[in-house]
Image 1 (cartoon, rainbow, N blue to C red):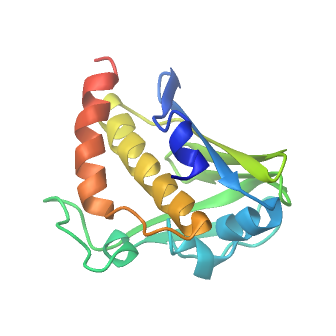
Image 2 (tube, rainbow, N blue to C red):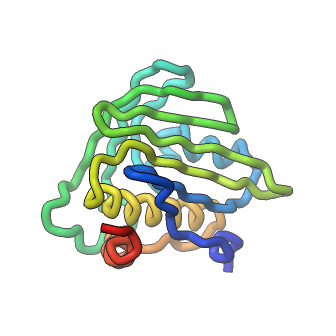
Length: 177
């Protein structure tokens, strides 16, 4: 079993509309950084989309969660095949920090901290508008990070939609109304 399994994988509610996730992942930091910034690697665990390497640059991520597993599993009713979100880079410090402000939808930051031969990834999502969105994003972020960990550890990733559906129920019970 990988090291990621030894950490508390659940996201932490840091305040209204703010979630924090941490994962201890295999290094080096440069490899994890490529999985955050290179579209062909990022699409394996999160979303495709070009990302320029400078603060202020525009960003568009394209989520196609059905493509994360074969077979894709059952997508919940109401979720499209593809989601797009535009924004711009607010922090870019190679192999240390990436932050993106989404147009009208808060901000996400990824910070990398070297821990011996591993890397502690801290992901914080801020500005989520309501509890339902917090629950949805918590389940999605948790699942995407589990897939990233599996990719980096050379393991078979969890089935996205099955994992998301299970975690959505768990976060709904965990996050106060």
